[in-house]
Length: 295
Image 1 (cartoon, rainbow, N blue to C red):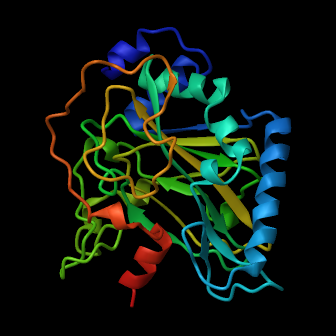
Image 2: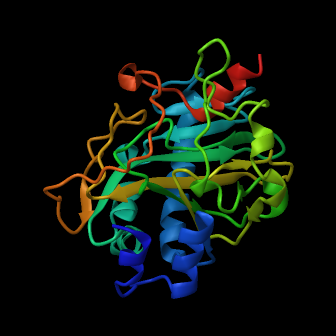
C-alpha cells in the first residue's frame, strides 16, 4: 500500500500528525505509550537473562557479549531473537497494542520478521555507526519498519537513536568495505552525502517507542551515563512484503501474520536493493560487524 492509501484508513493508535511524520521523515517517536505493567514484565524477564549470561564466557547464538564481560560484572551487547528465548517477549511482540501500531503504518496485513534486545552497558555501551537496515535483510518492498522499545528512561547521555530526516527517500548505501567484507555501516567516503548534521536524537522515558523505516539512515552514540540502556527491537513488514534472502536472526515466528491475512500477491518496489552475505550459516550482530570493520 502507498502512504496515501494507508493514511486514508482510520488509525487505531497513532494520530494523523504522527503517521505523517513517519512517512515524511522516515521515523516517529511515541512517548510513554507502553503501559507500565508491560514494562515491568519485560524488565523482569530481561533481568533474568542478564543473570543467565553470567555463566557464559563467549558469545553464542543467544548472547552477544561485550568486551570485559564476566560473572561478577556482566556486559551484554545483545540478546538474540528474544521472542524465542521467553514467551513473554513473543506475547508482547504479537500483542494487539503492537499490531495496532504497526497496522497504522503498514496497512491491514502485518507480518513479523525478527527481534533482538540490544544493550548499551553503563559507561561502556559502544556506538552504532550510521547505517540503513534493509541491506541486511532485503525485501520485495520497503515497507519493513523497526520498533524500538525503551525499557528504561533513556536520556541523551545514554546513546539513544539518531535518525536523519528524509533519508529514507534518498539513496541506499553500500555496507561492504573496499575488500568486499560486510561491515554493516556507511563508509567514511559515502557519509558526506548524508545530512547527519540534521539528525534528530530520539531520547525518551521508559515505555516510549521509536519507529524507523528500513531505509532511514540512523545511528547511536556511546552510552556515557552510569545507567545501562536495554532496547527491545521488533521488526515488522506489510503482509505483501517478502524477504529475498535468509533472515540473519531466524525464528519460528519469522513470517508470521500478527494482524490481518496472508496476501495472495506480493508487492514489488521497482527500486533495487543490495544483497547481503549469505546469512543461512548465522549472523553475529551489528556490533560485531562494525567492531571488526574498525580493526
